[in-house]
Amino acid sequence: MKPLRLGIACYPTYGGSGVMATELGIALAERGHEVHLFSYAWPSRLPACHPGLQFHGITVSDYPLFRYPPYDLALASSLRAVMQQRALDVVHVHYAVPHALCAWLAREMLPGCRTRIVTTLHGTDATILGRDPNYRDVIRFGLRQSDAVVCVSRWLEQQTHEVFDFGGPVTVIPNFVDQRRFRPRADQRMRRELGGNGAPLLLHTSNFRPLKRAADAVDVLARLTPRDALLVLVGDGPDLPQVREEAERLGVGRRLRFLGEVPDAETATAACDVALFPSSSESFGLAALEAMACGLPVVASRVGGLPEVVVHGETGFLEAVGDTAAMAADVQRLLDDPALRRAQGAAAVRRAGECFSLERCVTLHERLYESLLHQPS
Image (tube, rainbow, N blue to C red; front, side, top):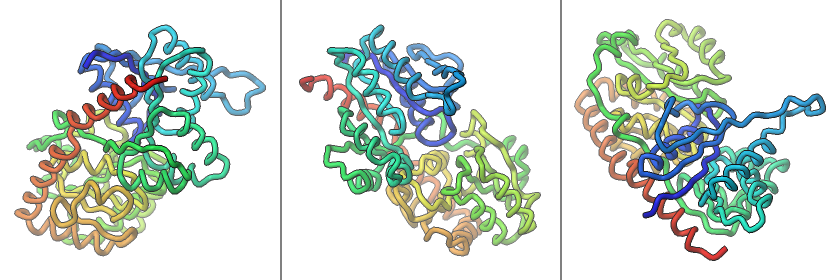
């Protein structure tokens, strides 16, 4: 296909929407497209320099009358300027609030503008904000003004139709993993740095918000025997103090390793043995997919889109939300049976490549963009 001129708007945070938007922009630039990435800060997965990709930082005016800085208006203005200067073919916004409305407003400011708008819902923009009467109607309006709506799982597609009473078409394009980065590797140095000289390493990656139930991962750790396993925590967020308190209460504080928002998360991920995701809600489970690509069996909650990623009994185990006893039993079984752990890890790598490869999912995005450009304005 011919090279396209694309805009991508996202949040820069460690969560799935920002990570996927950034990874998609990088992949599209590598395929020869012109990509403009919009965010209020430098995204966590964006390299310092990448050919074909230009970053546009959104600057918000600090005006005394503004109690809350009008990020949405600043983003709309920046989008409008680049739409006009570069005649963008598509603006793809990730996370509905406020990005879908910003893209629509930017296009409305340009009479005759033919830029197509794609809105990808990633989860809480539908399942939490979509249920808030302060946001539901404006999100629904943004979806209706979009030329295409994308969801990252079939579960989220169903939620979108139900929560917003949205009757328009929804395209399901799952999140993906770059297996050039997230792959199995024998890095004993990283294991030694994490303190895993012979000790099992559990992994939990998240933005440490209440939905992730990170304290449950600590409870699982405390239930294991022998008591030498370590819990590696990747990411940052408001629940970290609660995680520390729970670890001290259960007497496992010294067995936690806090890495924060590391840019090379794939190295720490591949050094671990089992990944643990006890979330109460997940629209997809990108961190689980990245762990699978590194050869880790995943023990997670049977919730949301996770069953579309993790196959119970094949690439890991799924249990009821909050059932830390069952999750601990699953982890214990994997640690006690290295052959089972290796078999599930190998199956996880295969599933990541067959169903969620970067190549497949980026191609699906390209086809969607191309189809929109052939539709009448």
